[in-house]
Each structure stands twice: as C-alpha cells, then as structure tokens.
Length: 309
Image 1 (cartoon, rainbow, N blue to C red):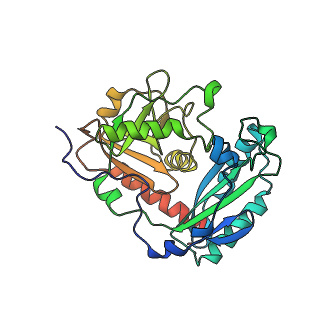
Image 2: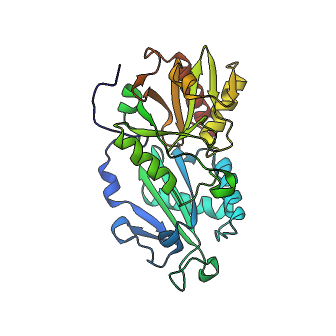
Image 3: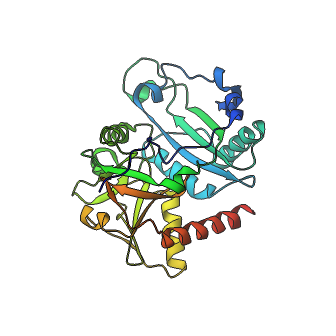
C-alpha cells in the first residue's frame, strides 16, 4: 500500500501571513526592512557556511526555553572558536528589540544567525575574518499550518547519512547544512516530504530537519543522540515522558522497527510535535495516535508554564 498522491509539504509549513512582507530584520544592531537587509558577499557565512544559528519561538512575549537554546548556541560557538560578540543578555535584548519592532508577542519564530564575519579575501582561513562577527535575526509571524497535524509527514529513507563526529559533528547547528539539503533533495526525488536519515551504522537517526521518534506498544523510542542534532524540543519530550510515566528509550533501532511502529512523530522548535503518516510508502499505524496526542498536550502545558501563558 502506498500513499495517496498529494502536494509535498514540510515540517516548516506555516499559515500565510501578509505581515511578513514588511518585517524588520536585525543586522548587526540595526533594524532594517526585509528588502534592505543585506550582508556582504565576502561574509564567511555566505562563502563557507562558517556560522552557527538557533531557531526559537515566541509565546506570550517570552522566548520559550531560551536558556537551553543559548546553552547549545554558545557551546557550538566555543567549539569552533567563534566569538558571537554578544552575551546571553545581549542576545535576549536583540531578540526582544526585533520582536517589539515587528509587533510580535506570540505565534512568532526567529532565526538567530552568527557568522565569523566579513573576510579580507575570498579564501577559507578563519584568520581572514578580521572585522568581527555578522549577527542577523529574522523574526516572522509564523504559525504551523493545520495540515501538518491533519495529514502528517511522508518520509523517505535516503542514502545520505548523518556523519561521524570527527567529520562534521551533527550536533552543530551550523550554517553548513549541505548534508541535510542533499538528503531533502533525495526525499523529494522519492516523492516524499522529508528525508529519514540513518546513522553511519545503518540505524534510524533523524530527518533532514527534525528529530525522529516512534511509538511501539506504548513505548517511545528515539535514536541514541550520537549522530543527530540534540534538539531542545527532543530533550523536552524525553523529560516529559519520564516525568509522566511514559516509557522512553534512547536506543539504536532499525527500519524494520520503524516500519512496524504504532505511531511516529517529529520534534522541532517550529512544529513542536508533527505526526509521521508514512515511511517509504508504508503507513505508520492505523492513524490513531494517542501517545503522540498526550505528548503534544504535555508539551503545550509546559510551554504555557514557562512562558506564563
């Protein structure tokens, strides 16, 4: 049995919002109209993908799980000797300035990007970036499309794998996303929405954009975390399961076990938890997703608690 044909979509599909046509974007301390927001062609992010980023959501005037996002962001910057030029407090101030300038209090998503900055010459060596970092914040009015929950995501297993840490550690939320872009293209060629990527040993790992979970006989499984982005939402889901009596395991498992799952879902800052409809054309479960629904409710309540909603 295969999926009924329908237009492709992704875990980042958002409801249309005309306000985004005139958003102001933060570029190195200045707020400029999106049509005027520019960085140099000599910027190390443009040339080499040399930079780090974080995606965060605004709920009730608060950036959810800000500290956890900053833990990852500053750890990543330190690991690659990238000075972002801002403290945590400075990042928060810049985020709040951007949101306020755009009249955003909730249902907003931002992408904080920091690169090594403008290079003196168009070559690789980091020492050629001498003028300091480039900092950009794009915040959009953004609410996940209702179709994400109604239809679910179709995944295709792809030949592109998540690499070893001594190649390019997949825990980095870096601007160098070509590995994931290739995986996404392979999934699209297979007629799916997104890619299910394996680890170097052939175990199920993650998608090109989100962390991946299955539910089998009431148990929630996800990968060991060794070869994937250790997502903030991923960690919150694992913690919520443990706190609420839902058996959860970080473990190796194969496609055989993924195909036979009762439920599957993806986690990410934008979509929270997004159901998976099928993998490689094989429907996941019978369409009833009680464990996923419970986790979504627990996560929604957690967000409301930490943001005062």
